[in-house]
Image 1: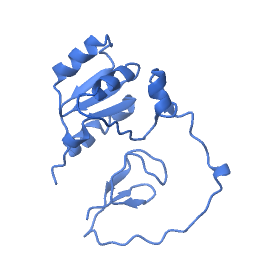
Image 2: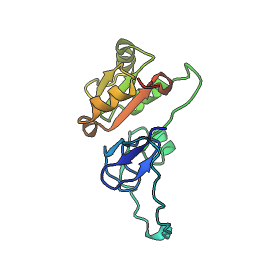
Image 3: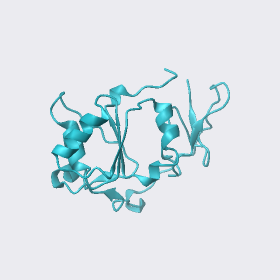
Image 4: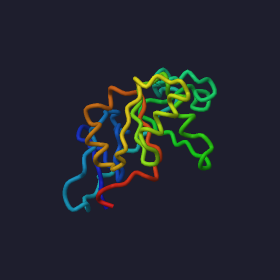
Length: 169
């Protein structure tokens, strides 16, 4: 089984993270080297009173669509993943486009063409200047391509997650 570790603090996981859950640094996860059978050392067990946990409530990106922001608890949490689900054709992509009109967005689509998304944005009277599109849904390509660009954007949309794939799987 593949594993990943943070190049700064050494935190290990079977999943890749954009932001290390241990030290909070971005883009530090790398594939672990070796045969994959290395054992993680037993970590010290620590308890922290919730009253002493630093709150990051100010680190949200509001969309400006009141009900959408309310559903997200006040906007997007930086570094979080939001999964929007619903029946086909119910309007998930339209809701996303409308809700993200005030943010700088990377829109990856494996289901609709750039032309379809552009026509929907025009129909919704959205400015196209803050939306950037790609039809590439290969995970390795996305990670490599966004390595130096992701901090220039507020939100990354993958429409839809079931179209994403890895070259190794």
